[in-house]
Amino acid sequence: MNRFSAGVSGAVARVADSALGPHQTAVIRIGFSATWLLFLLREFPHRQELYGPDGPWAWDLADQLVRSNGAFTALLWSDGQGWFEALYLLAVVWSVLLLLGWRTRTMSVLFMVGVLSLQNRSVFMGDGGDNVLHLMAVYLVFTRCGRVWSLDARRARRADGARARGERPRDRTGPALWGVLGFLLLLATLAGRMDGDWFVPALLWAVWSAQALWWLVGRCARTPHPRALLDVVANIVHNGALLVIMAEACLIYATAGWYKIQGSRWQDGTAVHYPLHLEYFSPWPALGDLLTASGTLVMLVTYGTVAVQVAFPFTLFNRRVKNVLLALMITEHAVIAVVLGLPFFSLAMIAADAVFLPTSFLRRLGNVFTRLHAWRRSPVLRTLPSRTRTRRRAGGVLVPAPRTGSPGEPVDHMDRAEQVEQVGRTKQ
Image 1 (cartoon, rainbow, N blue to C red):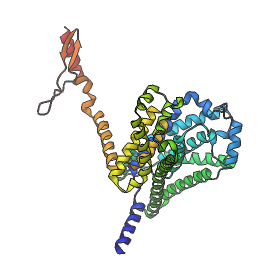
Image 2 (tube, rainbow, N blue to C red):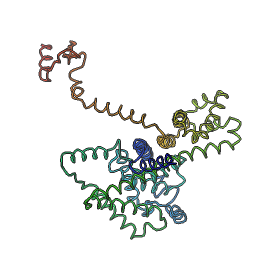
Image 3 (tube, rainbow, N blue to C red):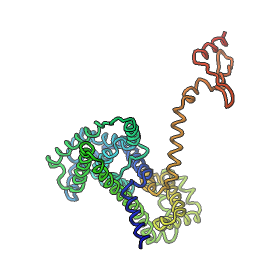
């Protein structure tokens, strides 16, 4: 009993003391913001047909549907062309800023507003990837997704360095940004634009109030205890949202797998054959014909898809088996993106799968990018184009470039002026 109590108290302390999975939530943030950004950029020439006021799904029809189901969309606040263009461009900007991790708490809220506004404007324009993105955009608001691999993390490191030097860092951008957003939210509420849907307005006001309380405590509290309490609450909310994201991904695969089992084409092993020969899902007809040329291969892929989707939620208790099935599912979505021409659906599912990636793998991946970034910014590399070319053509004569030295040898510190002078003497 004592051992059980110690385990429970340890788990509670871990959930309350830290935001779990910082690398996984960072990958989710980057993955979904990149997916939405690429979709908006690809469909930019067709934005009018998809979400514009003159599209097939007219503004009046969308307004009637929203009034009946209570969905949130800021696009229906006005039927003007300027409002649509501004909101579409803002959705692109918010996606870029969330991808970079700039003010992730603010950008996650605005990212959600952009996703819901566009998708709820034309609910018939989309596929399963849009549904996943729709849900994850809401879940991201509750996560602390900027702890690593973000501009917020870099700003936090600089603030810690300033505190170590005895300085007191001041943040004027955050309060000003939330002040403007609070004013706009108040105007929208008083104008009746939030009527009909209760969840999104309540969420927006709750997040704004939490940020205001956070700022007041950090500004006025004389002891660190109130800020520590708020930090504990934020960690619990983050960890709860992360658990919901994991459960959502498992639910998607479990329901997809069990529904496939009930289909006769999945039972006889021929289901994969048919979408590969549909014109809508055949960007590469020759590739589809090649993959379906072997009936055995089609049967193995059909049964393998069902087996992986049904078994995946049960493999979370075994790390090695889970990692193998995770690699198979990511590979499957990559193949779907190419063969069936569904890149954004595949990107959304891969981003959702990223919540299960091992932390050690993500850290090694981050270290690789860190080393590449440090290598590109190293002083030796900056002078590389002018010092390490093996040969240089001058007046038809190949002239060896000066050595920069090697381990154990002195480095030739010839500057640019001396190199130009040497080339001039060679020409003469």
